[in-house]
Image 1: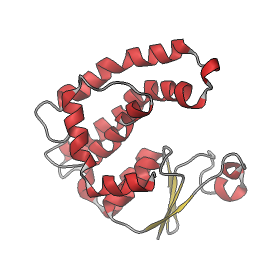
Image 2 (image 1 turned 90 degrees about the vertical axis):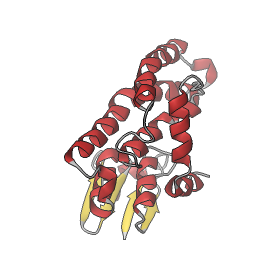
Image 3 (image 1 turned 180 degrees about the horizontal axis):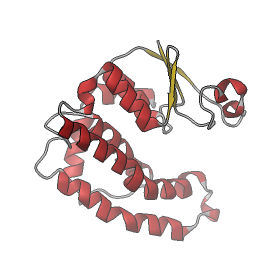
Image 4 (image 1 turned 135 degrees about the vertical axis):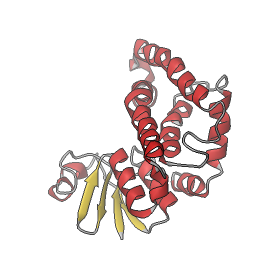
Length: 203
């Protein structure tokens, strides 16, 4: 039995989704940051960074969400990583890009719009974050122009990891209306059984 630490509504969400896609049984343990659970000796033994997510599989422990998803896929559903060395390279490319490039400005805006009270929000941070998004989203949109999914013609970890980040656009109310291919891709992904199960966990 695997144990995932974190909440489906947090950055651990992509790991919950990956577990659902891999079809493995798992238990979830929430971490109450306000109560200081993340600083407890018990949790620090799991993740010395005091952050979620973290995954325990038997006597093996791993943290960092992309690394966790790679491990889940490798161990329980390898086709999510690609069937050839080229596919595996592209899955890695999009997964890293989604976090290193696209997620950064989205998180900056998310912090301001979700966690900072309106009177204290820094409008310049939001504006600068939003200015960075069009070229990034255009890169993704153009890449999907003649594809059903990002790599090969099937759902892979590239789609899971990247669409998880794109969903932050909804939370910060960034309009994706002009990115037709992204919208169609997201609609296809939303029909995945694992996506439906993951969304149910978030309610």
